[in-house]
Image (cartoon, rainbow, N blue to C red):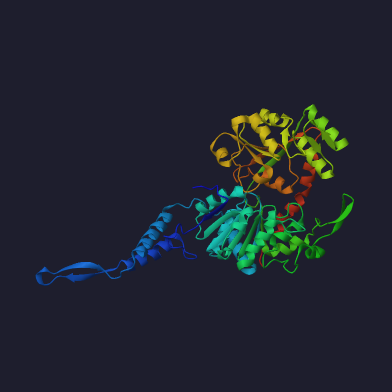
Length: 503
């Protein structure tokens, strides 16, 4: 079975020749119902043939349906019989069953639910369990491209009674007949949280939800990783949103944001990042929060910061760039004519790569890649990099002992290299002995999501290594990112839990 398509449908009716599953019917129920239809269809009676002593009796069909109808019922019977023989290999844990019951109650009352479940606690399966509880017939599951295969495997192993279409956010515009979906699951929902203007992703989701007003489940382990203001556009396309009366973010911000002004390039602009705690308070009736600790995880994630001495060339270029804001080479130019570009170029340089003004990029120092190889080559690890040239540096040093595909990582002894943004969500690196960061991203989402890629319920300890350059800017980025953790942790404080509360 190929899980690589960016747009995949996995449907209970495997082909037009098979009769579709009835809403709420299991494989066994469909089989029994079709068996009754088959018995009626193929019912016979005794009919006399001939006269006198030569007369005999033979079975004659009572009904005479078209041949294509007969074939369809026979194929359908075999289809559901085969499904019944496939063991269900994935089952809900008790805490997931409890969340499913409570979640279904919230959905029936409000038409949508936000499942704020920490990484590795089983958000995907829990969401499917709620869809099953609500007797959904057709489910649209929207996620990241890299997570599609994992979700389809969960669907196949769990074997719910609904049809499913799994698609990545970037391909939502390809979805046809969106009115057929009675439930939509929005995975990694925080990805729609851009503000003050909605992202293209949020607009596409709103368009789909406006067609039929389906049930909606939002999933995230980091609902507001950097600001409470990120909640508005995650739910603004939902008919039952508690912020529905605010036609846009600016109206919403007047009540829910402490608006400040920041000076950027000599101009004052409104800063909407200081969202108020009242945002999460308002979301409480629609939210179920659940932590790794609640689920029985006892993981001690230890973070280690390692420093690498970079080449003289790196420090020389960085010094010139900070002083002159430009470095002119024989063929290429490094330009940092704005504070943002200066920070970005230094971010690249201190890890040994650079992107020129022409758009070309190159490796100028293999020190970090060599350091990682020298210290971790005997271990099976997951390596997170930020810039594309960092991957090329790793490939130069590691050679064939490094892969970039999850399936290869799972089936071999090779280590894997993943870009932080694309590899931080929806995948499991449970086979990794450690996670090593070649570089660090500015996003708090990247920090929280990627560092938990190894977490499983049975794993007691995890090690995360950050490889920073001596004298570089990575350590300052690390400090800034970890300061944002309060926006994530607040969703998992006990007073926000609704699982065991009475409405």
